[in-house]
Amino acid sequence: MGKLAAKHSQQDLPQLDALQRELKRERYKRRFRRLLRSTINALIVVAAVAALVATLVLPVLQIAGTSMSPTLNDGDIVLLVKTSKLETGDLCAFYYSNKILIKRVIATPGDYIWIEPDGTVFLNGDPLDEPYVSEKALGECDVEFPYQVPENNFFVMGDQRETSIDSRSSVIGCIPKDQLVGKIFCKFWPLGEFDFIG
Image (cartoon, rainbow, N blue to C red; front, side, top):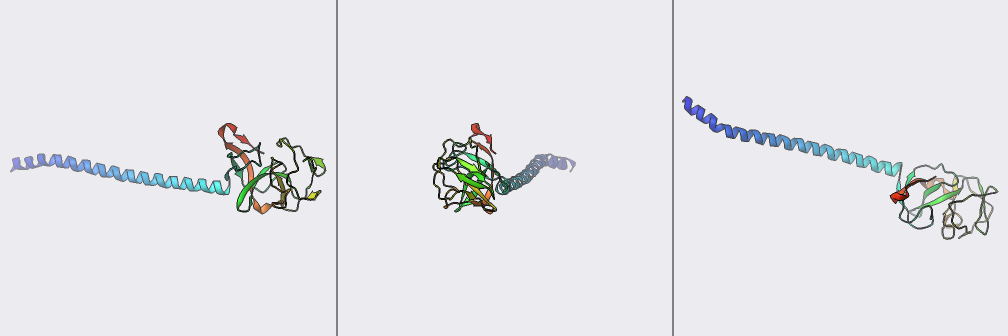
């Protein structure tokens, strides 16, 4: 009887080892699934936070067109800061006809502006220093000068004065504060041309 019990226990050892290995494998699978689930949850939270920050605080835009060259060129990618506090010279983004346009702030609420036929801009009686403009031009303009910028509005122009359609035209006009998306903070693409703007 004792020999038979010993024989059975020796035969049961391989089965016991196999059972322990299977249990170990199942525990490992459970731990792996838990780890995978928590990693996926963390990635979802990080992606959601990044999307919220990009939408609400620091929007990212790609430049389309040439109205802001040579400062910004077609295909450049810029980072904005959400704000409506703008000064002369700032680059801003605003909503216009279901699109987002980027122009330079030339005059703020209450300022007087005058543009000569040769494209020289006067702000409150003084000529504006505009090193960002490669060629001055009056461009498409149907505004009567001197022009006072209305309250809560901004007078904006593109750096490519000959071709830019901007506040000089009644098609766009001055930009109300509530249409502003924000101020351009930096250009980060192409990488070789990374630049803080403003």
